Length: 237
Ligand code: APR
Ligand code: ZN
Image 1 (cartoon, rainbow, N blue to C red):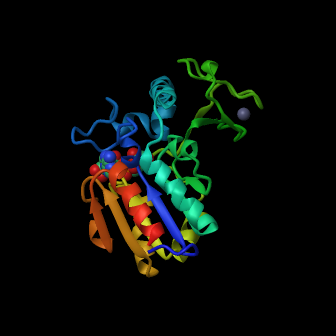
Image 2 (cartoon, rainbow, N blue to C red):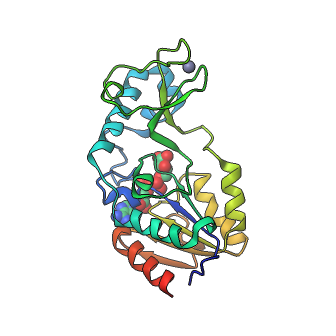
């Protein structure tokens, strides 16, 4: 199905990292790692209760040291090797499992747990040393600020690189969404754009996502089983 010059855009969500041991967001109990999302993932929460937000993200940042990428992440690297510059991976995930697996043409639209950002001078640093992973805030080395924030796109904030993302989706021939519930915009709206421009749209998810009707083909099941299986079939034709 894929020729080496087929333009492919992949959108991934929490479901692709679930088999690596990272919890997804919208579990049936409605809480996320024992927190309500609005208590920890909004600018207001950071303003009102920075310590709680910081400790929550420090927990998630430390978790990165205990998990590893899985076969679904790896299969996307194989697809990228085959398609090279015709491939783009957009992830909503803030873990680093795609890049650790070897993905290079990758956009982290919702930010990255490994990075911290200064709200005063906009300095962004990779901060994963032991000294960065305690309950104490990390200060900025470039200016006077003593509190870097997680480099994460919170609710009510604009995702990163949206122009680049829209550009790629508007030009793609195949669009594939993996492990995402289709609840959070603008990411969830990319499928409709791809569909509008005539791309073949493929979904892979454990449960039918919100926007399942827009897919030309939908495969229900575990990413760790379906993604390697489908990709190896498609690139060998
Ligand atoms: N394989 C495939 N799909 C899976 C698996 C798996 N092993 N495990 C879970 N899923 C599916 C679930 O059925 C669910 O539909 O992955 C989806 C994950 O959905 P969400 O938890 O809503 O995660 P996501 O869509 O990535 O959330 C989007 O919301 O909170 C924000 O910024 C956060 O990036 C996140 C955004
Ligand atoms: Zn600074």
